[in-house]
Amino acid sequence: MRQNEMDRVTTTIDQDVKVGELTERRRGRRDSGPSFRLRREDELTAFRVERRSMRPTREETSVSMLTDTYGKGSYLLPFMVKSVSMKFTEYIGSHHVFATEALLAAADSRGAAKQQLKEAVASGSVERVRRGLYVSNGGRFEGAGVDPYEVVAALDPDAVLSYHSALEAHGIAHNIGFECRFRTTAARSPFSFRDVRYVPHPQADGIPAQRVHGRAFGSVLVTTREQTLFDCLKHPEWAGGLEEAVRSLSAMPYLDAERVASLAIADSASMAARVGWLLEAKREAWRVPAEVIDRLRRACAGTVSKLDKRAAATRGWSGAWNMRLPETEEEVASWAR
Image (tube, rainbow, N blue to C red):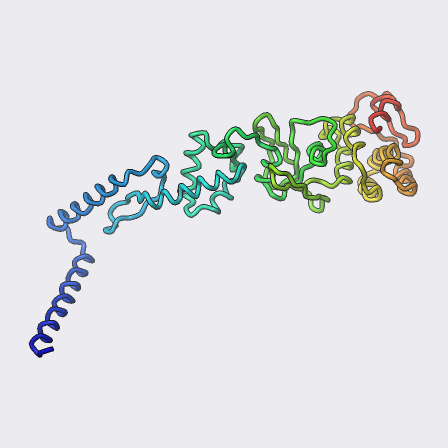
């Protein structure tokens, strides 16, 4: 290359650098002159025209905002909103019952997800169960029923089905109830949804529980057979009444008699008598050792108790257990067959 050509190239590069530096200084300056405002208005007009040409759908017009180049305004970017919208749609299409926090944890934008949830509830594609808990009615869930265990598992994965709900979960309930009782730390007040009343009970440490699986709800914790028997005899009013509790418990195929006896003896003499009465009635079916019956009898010796502490009337008597019965001894014995 000849020297004059090299000089011309060098001069051109120097001019480009100077022009670039001047442009950067002008951009960083808060110029309010008419030429600057006119140029900015032209650019914003072009941006709006381009945005209108994209024609975002109603689903895409949710809530993600970005600041424009000059930091003076905010504009919807449809491609970003559509991405967030698709993620929200996928989530409610794969989660029948879900908690708000679980939805927000899976979202890219918590603000956008909250707005879309609000719009989904207004349109009916999502239904509110209680504060922080929702049911999806869209996609494959349209017209689908809601298993109460789904609601409990979504509200609190560590909740434990108890009392009559535990009888149902174990498949031994004599009748189906319209209440769902569970131990939890996530709720304190009862609530109703689709003709089912949900009743939370305080969660206690060390409550024996096991996990049951279902096709509709995945899995949920439920009190063990032994804990369920103890609970239902201690609070038959939460198990559908004494007759319902005894008939249901009697349908258990087996249990650990030693374990349930220990629960009763550690509680009170009256509970030892109640549990002892039922274990003796089911001695052959459950193969209850004689020493377990003897332990329970010694634990309640000298104490007069009731099989149903809430029963106002006493129509029968169990001499073997010093216990008042709400019906005749023959009638009550028939419940345990």
